Amino acid sequence: MDPQIQPSTPPQPIEVPKSPFSLPMTLFLALFLGLGLASFIFHKPEKVSQVAMVQNDEFADWKTYRNEEYGFEFKYPANNDFYDMGVNVSEGVSWGKNFLLVAEIGLSKDGPYSVMAQLNIVKNTNQDLFPEADPSRERRISEQEMFINNINWTIVENEILYAGGIDFYKMAGYRDDNFTYYLTTSSDKENFEKILSTFKFTK
Image 1 (cartoon, rainbow, N blue to C red):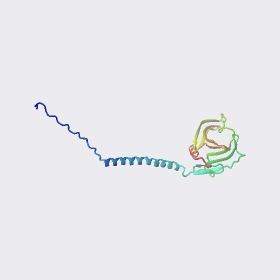
Image 2 (tube, helix red, strand yellow; image 1 turned 60 degrees about the horizontal axis):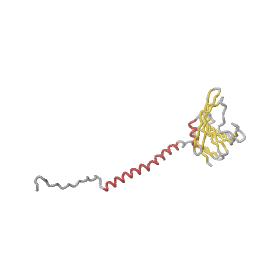
Image 3 (spheres, rainbow, N blue to C red; image 1 turned 60 degrees about the vertical axis):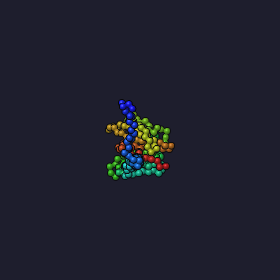
Image 4 (cartoon, helix red, strand yellow; image 1 turned 135 degrees about the vertical axis):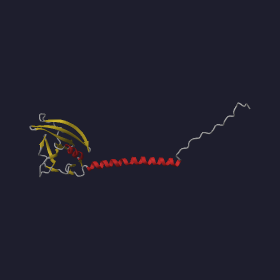
């Protein structure tokens, strides 16, 4: 043998590092992560329900006015009363329309009285929902549509000019096949919108 040629060294096997996790440990971690994800997903509806309950509690101490004849109801603040004026079809003509019902929501008439909102129901005519007012004394500020409880309300806000100054009022109107419903306020716009959000037909 040639002394300058060294015998070749056989290749050494490569050691693959062992995983620190055994098969049972891997299965345990997968199960743990799966349970955590499921817990997160199923707890979401509970949070939504809690929010809905808080919103509903806003009207928990409000009164409910229900009209069986025309089939509707709505809520209003407990510190106010509902006064049905009892107007019939032959009385209370406005805008050329005959009122069927005029009612007010306001503070007790036994003391200082102020109207928070007024409800009018009229028999349908061929006139527009909100006829054009005299521009010399009334101006339309805004008009929008809002879909609330399956009712498509049209809401307008007008400015009225008086000899003593300027006043504002907000009115929501809705018309079905037979009647037109109006809810109006000039003193409490915040509660007006809340009342409107609770208005719904019962038949």
